[in-house]
Length: 551
Image 1 (cartoon, rainbow, N blue to C red):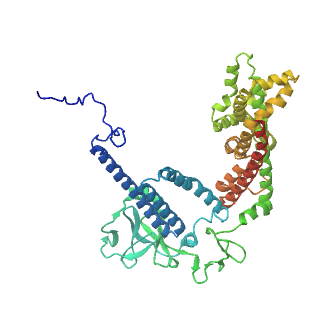
Image 2: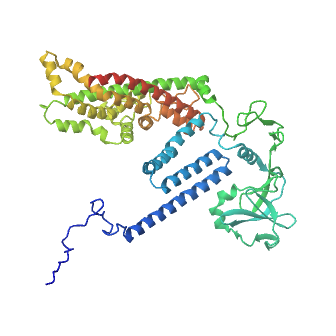
Image 3: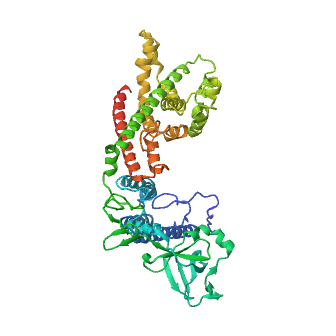
């Protein structure tokens, strides 16, 4: 009798395990060999290809940027770009290095958008960068020559048409001998033998489009500012036009001598030389602008504290900045803590409603609130004067003293909800046993607050007060939206007002329209702000360490 063996029921049998390890095969692998299915291999190949393509694009952009920087003379930056690109490529092509794959992008963006900006801003403080000192020396020389061009008297006009090629304008001129001459910006006139003539005047050239009247009207500003050199030497003059049909010769009154590195004014004979200040200057001290950007060392800091016209307003602004930031922090702390204690009483009815009303100023953007307050405090049409004061003409924002008081009140209104929220949370974290123990010992409400609640509140709020001081030290929005730093201080030539703090002064110096832009001096002021805030913050945080023992 033959013995038979039933085949195992694979549909209900448990998952086979490895004889060597006793573990089940991992998901996505076959039980027999443990090989990865084809679909996973395909996904891995696609991911690798995408990674290679992305890195290739990054490297190509880095190489392009490096070449541009090298042509511009910025070889250290070009070298840094290449090193960063190589580091990114190595990190993402090599297996492993998982922490670096997460750290590299964040580090690169941190360097690009924060560290580079900070370092460059600091570097500008040691230059004369600003209005009249923006480009390099070659740009300044070309600009000075261009500025000195004037129409040569008794020179006849030349027939011309304006032609365009790929968006670049040129003059097609017919000279006195009847030849067609073509030239453009930085391209001297050259003869073109294949020009088209009409009535003895050149009107077109193959490969160029002749502009009609409507096209010239659309681009009249561009045409009016176009100067076409007569030759490689600009001293021979340029051609300019006002109507696009007749060109006139303009010659420069300022002539540059490369050997002497000096300009000579042909009309007066005055010589202007490079004396190392970033501008060509005459013996009488008159400087030609534009100049060029140079390194000036600590000259901007010397100007800030050495020139009386700058030192006096700067010291006043520094004092007011400390008063503004210090009073704001102390006042908002006092009001916030007081309201937090008053609304911490569980027997108070409508306590939640009162809390919502108290934090309403915190719910609106600060710059919008400042604009609203600016309207409320208007001396002629404001709600405060017309309604609350019965039509009084109180100059809240135009009198130096009242403007400062108004700013302090508005900033108190904007800042106390933050302190109130923090104090409310800190009060609720104080154990009730401490308060009960103090009351059992006979302490009154004021003693309980001064001896128990306030020290424990300071553990939480002291670091925040230091941060609030640093924030208000640079609180640009409130000052600028309320008074724009005014009223103007007429006792100085600087563009500074009675309510300016350091950050608004920096803004006016850097982007002011009345006194020009002086980025170097503004950057020096920024470094002063940094040093002051850093010193105050370090001192404040050191003092708050003493509160850690209260835990």
